[in-house]
Image (cartoon, rainbow, N blue to C red; front, side, top):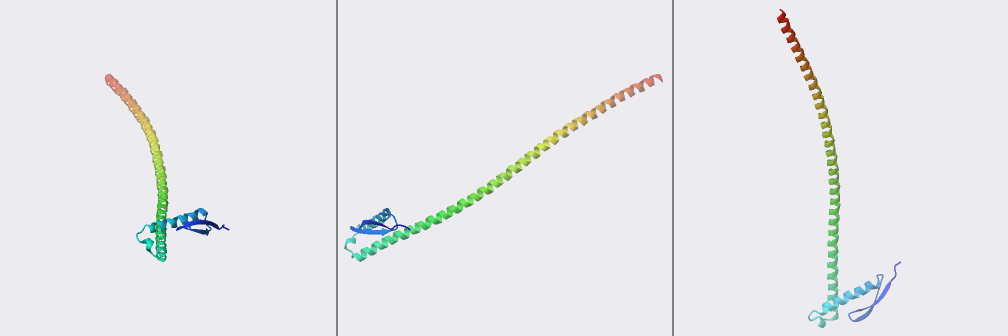
Length: 162
């Protein structure tokens, strides 16, 4: 269970004992705030001539005004924080999507590179095969040419005999 604290403070020139579950430092901070508000109001022209009840009402109104302004500011900060949390959430999901797309692009790029290398290997193999067949055809053409020359020489020899 929390311990109740007491602190003697001066508010408006009078010693008052404040008590609460907050720290003594907090209770002194509240007293300082009240004294500042009283001081601000005291600087207003004609304030000193006002009845005590009116002074208390003005003090209450000023404190209420500060409260609602602080509450509005806290709500604005909360909304801003929620908006920024949503932005962070959205950005994280966008980052995940981009990473997934990048990984897919890298996979596709690797697959394309693998396919290109396979096609280059196939082209080299086909070019080698084509060169070997060309060599074979050229050899057959040479052999046929040699055979033709032999036959022509034989025909020419036979014609000379006849």
